[in-house]
Length: 308
Image (cartoon, rainbow, N blue to C red):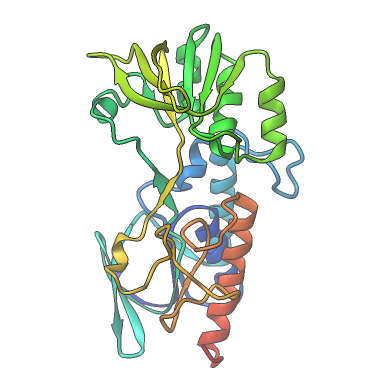
């Protein structure tokens, strides 16, 4: 992987792969650092809605490999390496990974995010033993049993709808008084006979020794607590942007995301950002793809002598 490239894209999700595709089609020597798992968070989503050309939705595990095929066919090099750090290098940028170092004229950061955790003592201990981060993976294992989902956004309701096709009952636990998900998901969840929505509810503890047996919940209005029986718990309470490699080189917004201008350019000359790691990103696959394409155009313009 050692060498020099016009553009290096960090991230193997839809934003990064689309940026790699766009950069390669513009004639740039392009490298995509796809990370440990191609597709990132989208890989576990059974149906991504709102993508043009897929009226019935498309699984993330299909969409991302298709995007990779397009990027490599256009000439981008895609490698399973993760960005660990970057530093200025005589007007260019040096990127370090577990596979070595490389030099780039411009860098597009599309490193995505990881699911935020509850921080409860048993969460990591019971991960894979009732605590899950992937409904499409584990839904068949909870057939005809009750499960709980924590969260009120798109991901939480998407996973609840997936689980409802298998589980006896799906209880969605949300701290707020209103859901933040798209109206289409909210309407479907409210109408589903096996989905129950509980608002103003917090999870105080995860119960079980070798396997999850239930969760202790608390009504945030009355303060009363109860134990909810559940065969599995799916946690979707938000995202934590993956930006540790920046080592404070860029000022982040209060949510830990990378601020950019409308052309995806950051404060650092030659560094751009796209997808959920970018401040103001809509957090949807089609939006991330658009940002990746825009970042590729802006990076190419910069390398062609454009102002920053």
